[in-house]
Image (cartoon, rainbow, N blue to C red; front, top):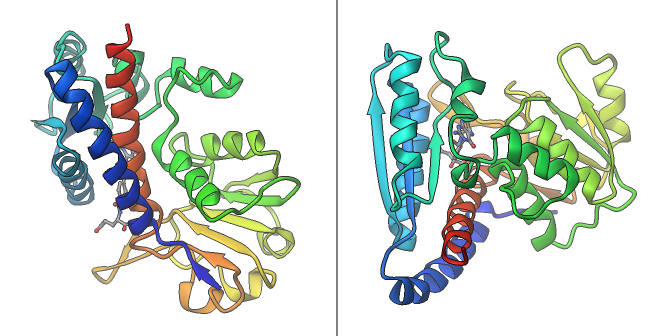
Length: 283
Ligand SMILES: Nc1nc2c(c(=O)[nH]1)N[C@@H](CN(C=O)c1ccc(C(=O)N[C@@H](CCC(=O)O)C(=O)O)cc1)CN2
């Protein structure tokens, strides 16, 4: 059994970007820049935003964090985005999700210029992903999972892959990227019947449901590849959607939580920001 080390892989990606960026910065005369908007004080979001800013510092990017009150109006949030769209030092913009309920998430995402949407959530980038137009940005978590498969030489061609969860951030784009790898994909949701039977048949399981230890040993077959996208806090401790202790006894490859998909999400964000910077330089 191999534990897929997302932390080490993300560090390798960041090292490569740091090097390429420092060479380009000398030629261009400015750093790549990422702006992160956070609304309210959700504790988990605070951690993720801090990790994103740390990653920017790690690779030498310019970063700015715009902290906004929980009660901000949609109009005022849109005007912050407009300023960043017009700021030439900013290559990437993201709004940390989730947003408070009074704000229309889709409206906000689509207000970000598609060329700066390094989260890959804008309708234009989702469309580009759908048809395989490489000029767009891929959503960071699914792109990070694909990068893990490539790094560990896990071939998906003809494999039966079960994706648990169909969120816009993970499940749906993950399904699409797996199809591009010629996997046979089944996407489950909370209404799916006989999940346990489906799990037993899967060669690869990608758990992104948000239920602690949903996937158990009795559910999976010997040699299964397990990717745990879940990040749950139980009694102050982090755990994924997979019972790691037990399932790792049957798996051929498995990701841990923490230290698996999470750091890869951040590495892909940095990669997308660097891509945006490069695209601007080449214009
Ligand atoms: N605008 C966005 N919002 C959200 C996204 C996103 O991609 N864009 N995804 C998730 C949260 N997320 C990124 O923002 C994210 C989650 C987890 C990690 C991470 O590094 N996890 C660590 C553990 C960190 C901890 O102590 O909690 C790990 O798994 O090792 C990074 C990013 C929802 N919102």
